[in-house]
Image 1: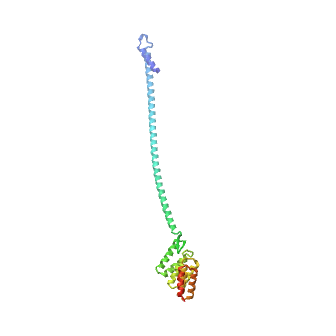
Image 2: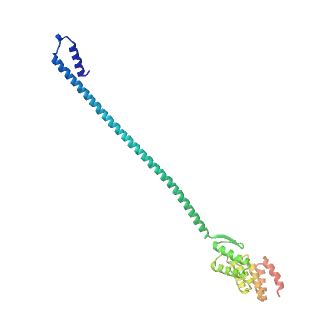
Length: 257
């Protein structure tokens, strides 16, 4: 029991006893009561003050806690917003990268396509396989198309131009052959003979070589050079005995006198 309460109990016992046996007089009793009341009041005040202070501290701590919670919530919301922004940026970057990859693919595809237009291609002409530029093939096909249309003067120009632009081409023997035929058709026999001989000089084993020799003989016949024509036909039979041109040469020899 606290001292103040023990004192109060003692006073009560004293006050309840007969006056003849009282340990204290009235003045002392009053002073004791007053002192007791003051102590009780002081204790109560101190308790109330401590309670108030505790309540204040609790209120401040609660307020601080609420502020901390609000700040934490604000930080969380800020982080969420930042995360959402970063996610959005990442998605945009992913789309941008995909678009750049698509553009790069298109560019490379277009570049490859343009490059293929200049890359040599494998062609086969008169049984001969070789690489040719695409422009080279296009020009040869165009010149041959002019010949087949019957435009022999135009074909001559086209084949002469082809031979000038592509002197080392695999098309050269065939170009000489068709140029000679175009000149034969326009009765330019001497030039035709020269171009057939050009074919034989460049490619004596060409599949059209026997035809070229036979064409030379035909030109010589047209030039009224029968002796030279006979010699050419005889050479044809010796050089290419198994060819169709050799068979035709034998028949023509019988008609030449």
